Length: 443
Image 1: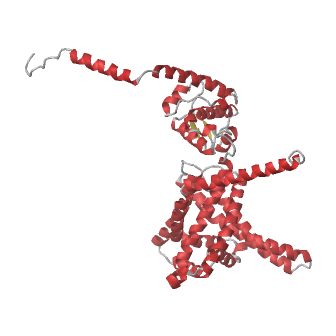
Image 2 (image 1 turned 90 degrees about the vertical axis):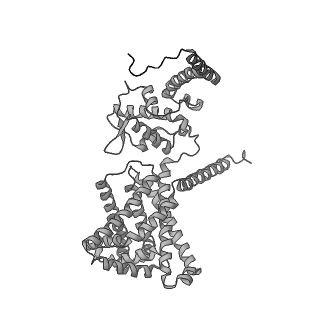
Image 3 (image 1 turned 180 degrees about the vertical axis):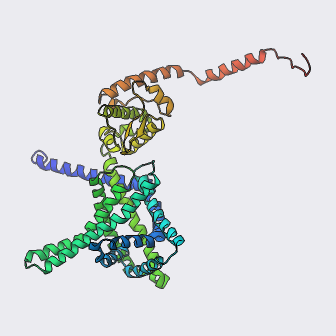
């Protein structure tokens, strides 16, 4: 059959390989999600959101009213946010939060400082969770963090409001035009406008919050993934709350509170899954042996990174993590992050203001011995499958094999010899005449 239909066989193989690729990628995302403790982070963020949601909404809507073009849409935006915030109890939660926000307007200076601190605490928790996902150890300065937080708080709602402005424009266009086709197009665009606003907000979150450069296309892909999950979660949660009224039977009028908390938790699970998806686009290596990701080969990877930095230095520039991923396709992002941390610890490289790295040591005087002494690397040869990949691997393999060979010659002795040698020294020490004690007062 395959001989008669070779094109069909190739197509089936391509589909099968693509399916395996997608399955492996999604498994990687889920595995990283649990490894990074995202469920715990979602719980922390859910409780932090409860504390900071009132000041956040106060800031967001005060910023919205500062722009005349969006002031008329402030009420619509509130309705849209709460309709999507808690699918089954949005009106109840909206009434409570609006009451709290109105009371917050009359707080004293101390009270305002408190709720502002709660809002900053929430953004700090988001920052910590995102940087854990992207394996970023270095934190931003307080001023940089505040600027990023303020930008996220203001630009995110701005993007959502822009989609609502577009929706209103389409409604007006349909009312004042005689074109028959506009109505159908307008209905389709109206349906996707809120989804587009969510995608834009997620894209901005994934691109701006991590303390490293995230490609916009990666952030956009993760945002679309998260927005789709958000729609599925919203519909599923609404169906569950509507058809299984357990909380209303137990809590009565207070049922909105646990429902609200559970929904916030699910929202953060979706957001963090989208972040893992975004990070995995660059960090996932499907179908590769991941040879240089073996911890025993950390020295080999570190030396190769020094070579990459040395080449970039010839052009007067540094390298970002994404560029290093492109240059070292046999290593995962996690392995490169660990190697960069090791090189920073040994002060072989340093960070730049742009977020990349450059060499901090002169490779003409910085030796392999210096690198080996400064960090607890394992001395291991380059794997045979990578040895002939390029001239660097061949030269490094010769050096490491010689070093390992000498160490093996020195260490190739029974352990018993060490004990007997030490026992022989102890025996000789026992045969030495004892030195008489000197009494006090003797000359």
